[in-house]
Image 1 (cartoon, rainbow, N blue to C red):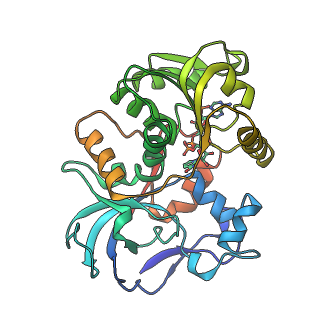
Image 2 (image 1 turned 180 degrees about the horizontal axis):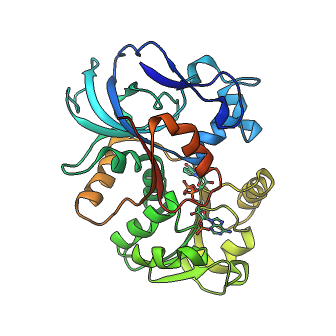
Length: 317
Ligand SMILES: NC(=O)c1ccc[n+]([C@@H]2O[C@H](COP(=O)([O-])OP(=O)(O)OC[C@H]3O[C@@H](n4cnc5c(N)ncnc54)[C@H](OP(=O)(O)O)[C@@H]3O)[C@@H](O)[C@H]2O)c1
């Protein structure tokens, strides 16, 4: 089968398209013929081995051979079902996420419990764009942020992959939403349903005096003072610099402000909650650019600028 592989850390040029063996089916897993992927910041963090701390997990000097094939988000069709898998059958159209990599390939052997069934009428590129960004938004707002109907939420970085899902999910759960993005994306964020938009290039968010029940920072540049000034509780998922993240973690540990930082966990229940929200029309998946699978390195290069409007997808056809 065709797959992108990498044997060293570096930019998108380290990704090579080559012929490799099709993965063998394992217990509790499904074999998926991949039809589409999407690109996420996690792809280039893992590809570059940055921040350096990530190398303790993925390989100190070069990527461990088990992480040879990159790629996390996928959608496709189940070709084979392993033993002890009850929820899926051959021919099911599924979408999911694996931070173990392996998704930038024609076939992927993946744990069944990180897959969900695609709703009828949805497309592969559309659903491949959902897993990491959609799960992060859902778990940030609902699992960790405990958002309730009638509450107010500030979404910092409202126009990107995570942010554009967060605005729509928060509205679907009955919240009042203020989105922070660049001026060029203000109209886009309003069309997602945001009640109010703050353009960070026109108003300094670090001096904003609004008050919110929940602050969700998907960009990762809000300070501890920003959280305490504007919010009752906060969830941070974005990453700007190591120094900023360490300062946040330390201040969070010693301060009284309830701030959660977490890594999204894929599971069938949350994926299918997102699928239902898409089927009901509560969430629209916005794809800014679609690439061929042959251009996966270019897709990663594009999203590294961290200015994506919605998502970037790659299709295997
Ligand atoms: N913890 C987790 O499990 C988890 C999971 C997924 C992602 N993440 C992290 O979350 C972050 C966002 O991921 P993503 O996929 O949404 O990335 P993305 O699609 O590249 O979106 C980033 C967004 O940040 C916005 N932005 C840039 N500068 C900003 C500023 N000064 N203030 C506010 N917003 C600004 C951009 O909007 P404009 O173009 O309008 O400026 C852009 O839309 C990344 O750091 C990623 O690593 C964490």
